[in-house]
Amino acid sequence: MSPIGVFDSGVGGLSVLAALRAELPRERFVYFADTAFAPYGERGDAYVIERSRKVTGQLVAEHGIKALVVACNTATTAAIHMLRAEHPVLPIVGLEPALKPAVAASRTGHISVMATRGTLASAKYAALRDSFAGPASVRAVPCDGLVKAIEGFDTEAIAALCARYMAEAGPFGNASGEVDTVVLGCTHYPLVKNELQRHAPPGLRFIDTGAAVAQQTRRVLASLDRLADSGDGGLLLQGSGELAVLEAAAAHWLPQPRQNGTTATAANVA
Ligand code: DGL
Image (cartoon, rainbow, N blue to C red; front, top):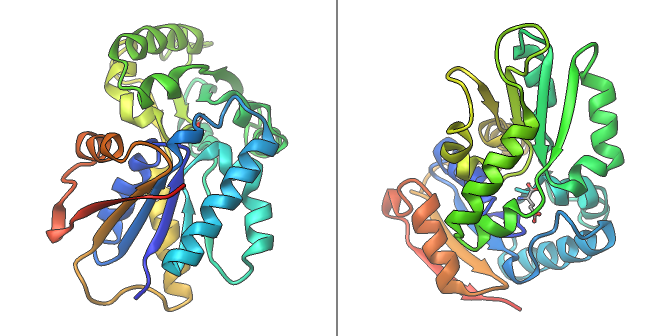
């Protein structure tokens, strides 16, 4: 069986890959981190579309992937329509900020969405908000610089930026007018959830899309009869940047990176 391709601008999609591997332990995955060209979120659509097309073309040509998961809100927002048009028979699963479940879960009706500037400025996000916000108050919090800090393992910058953006996302609480639910609308942010939680009262709800995307991927593959029925998984790591850094990131961010006898092998791709 061919592998499932997963890509992100960098290591953020590892948060989605972890959910995919938990949901689909028999599947083989190729994860592509476009690190040399990250971050995507502050660069505009044309750039993100070009990179997404290159990476997808590479995953299709080299690995004959049976499905693609765009593990990046920014790339989904800017490029998924183009990728679907260019690869009409390839099932493509994308991500968008989990506004709908957040609105359903919130008691106070006050929600904050942390995401990249690109995602929050997009027409797709505006449409999402118009469809699902209803009477809820939804605050957009663009977290400039946070992806770069995570990519660079810059713990000092991560701590400072998490403090700053959580202050912008609040005030938190369960009283009227307070935010009780925060959407992590960038796949990098679940990686630093512990740091974000340091600035949150107990009980603040964080919502991300990893598990939902993994379930959707299962549904799509099942409907096409493309689920692997044997095998014990497998993971190939590729990227446009330093492979040693990607391997270190996978070892750091993926729970049990070598579960199920999986070997993470790196191969560089320009
Ligand atoms: N991880 C990405 C997202 O979900 C992209 C971050 C970036 O490259 O700015 O939006």
